[in-house]
Image 1: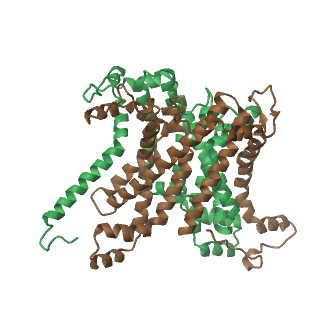
Image 2: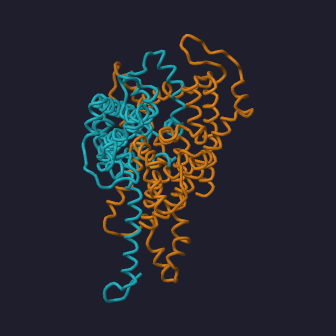
Image 3: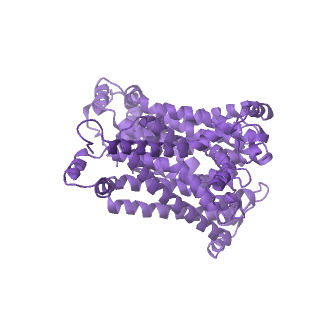
Length: 279
Length: 313
């Protein structure tokens, strides 16, 4: 490890150079498709069809303009935001008390039941939902989509927040009780403000998951409520030659996710592994 | 897992102010723990448990799903048909095991290797970690569309890479022989970073004095990795593998967007097979039976993994 007493030895420098080369190679592999996505979204459809792929071209915003003109892309973006924020909001209302109840009073069975939702493939819910939603008139409604996506966000929010609530010192809550605070009041006035950092990261994670969801809206959404992943996909099925539209819409749908990842950073991995590393 | 903290009713601060009108309030306070979990519980019953039961009932019938028509009770016929060797089901089972098994195995090996590479101090560590989160977090549909075009046999960039490297011509997703390896490569690209980041988090918390002692005893870095790091982070690695298994079986978006299960049925996983049976062919009864079977397959897989984990923890 120690490479001589006076400065780093040549072997150590060589090792370090080798390490950075390996690092750059690894990162290049994982970042390349993102670069390619953004890069290609500035090419014309003709340039995208060329082989070998072109690297020098006059960039154009045409694809983005097309995306906004061709489809009611603004409306679909609004749909996506509505479903995402609606689901996260309701998910918080259901998930936060549950997480607190589990953390403080240890409802193991409930915790495991919530976790089980994570293991069952979405398609298992989709078949019965489709039939039930149809008879209740919930197809192509925001209510239906929010209900469906709660299956993703409630377990996620609950399981992230359990560990945050467990970190709230019990003494604080007991002190509030002695001062005449009810148990609901303790939850609302003491515990909830203290877990705010966790709340933010759980919320952003739930937003990402709902935003990315494709299978549920593919079946349950319609013309009115279609969300972005379904729209991006439809650029392929209707007109495969519109590669520019595909790349531009793929870039647009990915951009908010990148921003959200930058906001949550380390919490992101913690949230993803919930349920896998515990229980 | 979670220690329950029973709140004895005799605890002095648990008793609210006395009074007739407070009877209900007292009752609520006494059962308060249930009121916290009740909303989520009711939601789960209505949106998860009830539909799953409904699926179970439906699995004993034949139904096109048309609102005007009602399901016809046919007993165990659907199950008999699936298990008597429905070729579509057998194919889907094979594809699922192949895809999931290979992806998870490669992701775990690569992920641990990369975690070992990055488990040191270097300039730009934070940036590297953030960049590696992108494949994990991004919209699968968008990624799948990009990969689909990268794999395009006539003008995809992978086709060009293969040509530059003098590989024999590849048809990637368009060839039944290469479609699953191509999908595995996509999955490995997307999810290896997750395994890596989880393992890295486990490695960081290992005590440094083990390594110092090993170094004094003359152990090479290679020996230190095999004899110290690997055994110590094994629980983390197993947990990451479990997580990947659970999610890999569920993979839908990536395969549906790139191949729709094709060419033919060469990449049709159980997930896609059920989707086709229900929403393409409108065999709702049959699809329900498949779902119940899928449910038990996943349950069995998870139980095996849990017992493996218990056995070595």
